[in-house]
Length: 84
Image 1 (tube, rainbow, N blue to C red):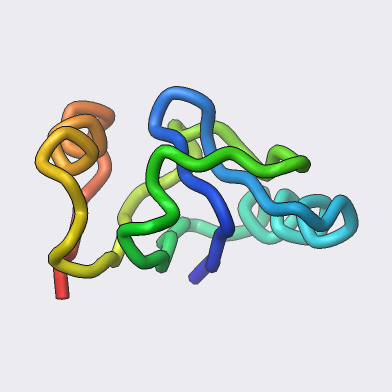
Image 2 (image 1 turned 45 degrees about the horizontal axis):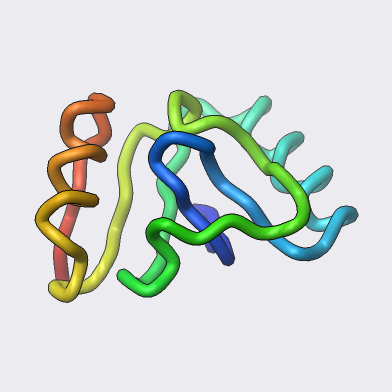
């Protein structure tokens, strides 16, 4: 499970912390499955440090305020989305 500061479906996962991005990349590399947990305000945002491309994500858990466009883009990218 990975929390992110920004999730731009076309750019990928980001955080403002360079060291955190490095640790998160290693976590993704050794994990069998990557689940991103973030609230809807994180979509469409980019931060300083890239963690991974969208293709590294298997599943996303977010809130019901996610836009229909972001939800559709995630699903089109083959990401399972759980809205809570």
